[in-house]
Length: 126
Image: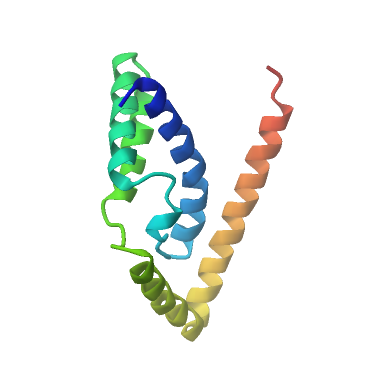
């Protein structure tokens, strides 16, 4: 894989992490078909970029890549398994009002942080 291809994978991965964050807050699996590339390609591209950032001294970015790569370790085997897992979690959530309230509050907090971050980015002059 070329560095250019790895850069594209990293950009897709960074965008995907916003989606992953919302699913994670609700304790839901993301169906494998939602991922921007097959897991093997993602890991290969992320490894290349992690090494490039580490070599250039950008340890913060290298560590961020390393931390998020763990999301590739325990994927459901297919979309059907993900949906079955999600149904189970959603049923549990709706049977337990405290859990539902907690998860929805966390989702709203994340949304608010995301909106604030986007507003801050608009105010940054380049």
